[in-house]
Length: 298
Length: 180
Image 1 (cartoon, chains in turn cyan, yellow):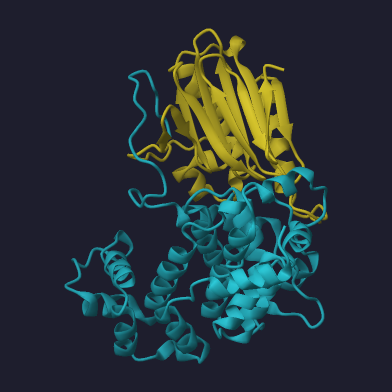
Image 2 (spheres, rainbow over the protein chains, first blue to last red):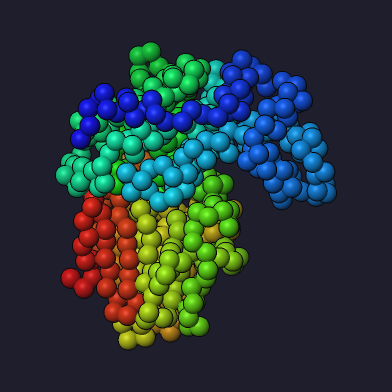
């Protein structure tokens, strides 16, 4: 068990979101979707991992049929501002989360995959259920990507098996309540504190804070979207640790967005395919199972 | 079973394996006839893990399906039927028979199908996954030997192919689902 002070001290020791992401988020939040491509190229070229992802995406099947890109500038022109920003944010956030979630019993890469799945779901929900709600697609994508960032702080203060022991004794209360009892704050609040420290725009801070309990007065459409995206990711089996499904699904958010069972199930199917780990990315151990009689059917 | 898509199930060049364990991912299935192996699937939430095992032929299979009905996305079902219970379960059944199992010897177990909190009956994906499981097994004339489903917690399911023993790890504890 840790005190709130211990937990906040842990939070302060966490690395900041890389400068590239911060610059891109500020640009997007300032309505910079039409920003000069050269400016974006300058930002992404400062980070090798991001530049590599940009080149890989530009050469991937989705953008194929037009020959291989010659270099970063070519890739930047081919992908456009929106895609570039997403790749950079995805790469850096998932990098930050790659080893996160250990205290929840999550395997390496699980939290990154869940972050990305939620971000894709949020983006889709803005387009299908965001009419008239003034929710920005890019901001929804970033907020959903960062929604579980507070789990990094829990990882630092939770002792081995602490959360497993909590889940073993848990009844049907939301898991956030157990986190507050054990660490003085829950991962949603800690995530919001972290986003605040990083100087991220207020709507993102609010959405991260409320992603398991969107407020009803006043309502926050962005938080409703991120909350729904989080549930969709969980239904797709992403990021399910020893906290299981011990999070409420908010009927208010459902009614406000007007989501139906068919909408959300279709989204569950979509995001799983979109977040499947690429082969050879180290998320799984490699080497096919030996044994001549083994029948691999899937 | 006319609804089963004719397209083959997704194939991956590298089947994740951890030593003697074959790992079944989300919306995935594996069938094996190798007594030295186990098949494992991690963190079942609302998804359901289903095992079929023939103790004489030592053939076992596992499906980790995510959603009950393929009607929600026929396109996705064509690419990966293991996503859906209604089309994934008959495929698992056919694959274990192809691998040498006999229908009358099959031991059928299931785990998962948990529910998020406060879902007022609108979505209930875990519950509907459990319903489709019973419906398809009824059609296939198979009975569940043992199951551990519902609640809010996640479960990791492992079947040992040497003897069909099934272990469930959940909430920090390990229990045996089969034999009872």
